[in-house]
Image 1 (spheres, rainbow, N blue to C red):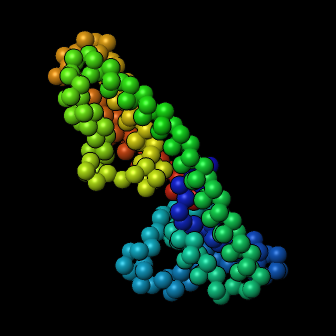
Image 2 (cartoon, rainbow, N blue to C red):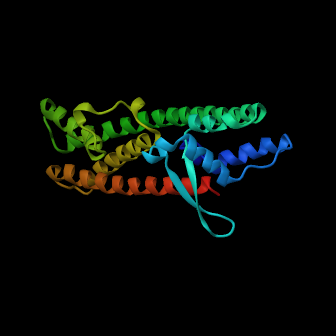
Image 3 (cartoon, one colour):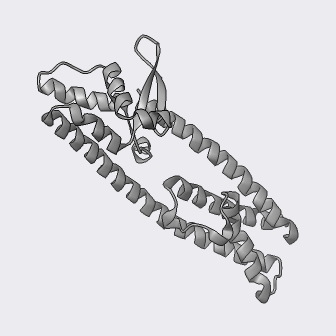
Length: 234
């Protein structure tokens, strides 16, 4: 399901599989991947030259390095124009079903992330309240610290805190990272208080921890995306 949720394109290999499935039903000869690549290259020569369409390498059954194109769903439909009406309609129906499934899964995951985010933000707010008591910060000055801690995560993620995006504008990956970093802030504040770390040092400790976790998560998402690409070619 992870691969499907993050899927925004279809490879030429996946498209070929669907084309040949319905060609077979029509008692027609199967298309070779080589021939499909030629159609794609002719149809999207400009986009390929401008690197608006990317390609990926895979190893075929004879252990040779081969290439496959990544197409948007719209581009995949365009490639089908030379197929018979039956094949074209069947494959387009498959692509649209795939698009709708992905949209539903993404919305489901976003709703789950929003709910989890509300819980995490409540815990983070409670931790900052406890920190204000620990540091004996006067009520009239507490807003400054709330602002620093709540903007910390967005700064680490590369956003301008004065113009940070709303949660509904963020991608699924960004929401997951945001929720994780809010949990880190919550735990790190409580750990520092438990260790009786001087109040003035806690912000830097929290920032260092958030930086560390963020770098690790970025590497994880990059690796996961590479693995997803490889899975789509298997």
